[in-house]
Length: 393
Ligand SMILES: [Zn+2]
Image (cartoon, rainbow, N blue to C red):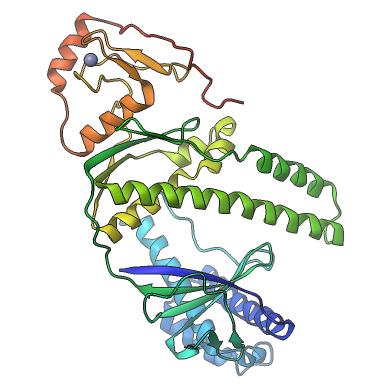
């Protein structure tokens, strides 16, 4: 099983220059190949690789010879993967949302270059990259095994990282519990079927800062130094938000996967919801998709079962105790009392319990539920003091 291990490093001025040159070359190789593919049709890695070798003999592109050829080849391999994924997505062979065609790379976005075995080596504390030299990353944790590749990254806030791909062994830890269902929301990030709740860190102060800076940026002159400074500030604030979120999501997903043998989530139509402009900012900040990806990856690492149930399951419309169906509830209603069995439920916890039931194959007799819902039209709804609007803004 493969994993990524990432470390920060601080390049010397000389290395900064060499890396800038390398990133530029990687970008040009990608953009040239993409332009060609868009003009005609995608011709495959081998053809593009041969064209790259030829182009190095021309005056316009001979400067590509000044950097290592390994990341340039890798840039074409990455383009090849991007095209394969795109074609698979077009043919419906790929699950998840539809992919768009590969895009041109911009100088202002984050930059990267990948070295495979032939282009790098690790000696003691330092990492040697061909034609760049020795880099000294901060080894925050030990590499578990020999890496098969390393990607050098410069993000929008001008931070540098080395990201290694390594082979890792599944971890052997026995789960305390059989299974857990998780209901994701905005006010409560995750409500668990065991009654626990996890709340997101508060991003609103940083989010407000980003919005203010974006307004400032819009007023500043293109290409000016001041504008560039604002752009960097925005990137730094975005990073702060992302780091806080990542830390929270990592801790929560590790705990859940470590303690439970089966983890059940609901498939959320995130891209559909993000189209709702009022909700979109809050949803993007939450990182639901990131959380799901983390749970899935960690389940593999810990040998757990990871299940996603259909978003059409009426998990908030059914009593998790007796299966009685009370129908749709307004988002504002946080607490429900079942008319059939009298159980009082917290809305999110009830949904989490149903997610767990459906995910582990224990569902209520739907025929019985349907019969009952015909005779009794509405369940009594208890609005408790916990009622809050979903966004809380
Ligand atoms: Zn009930």
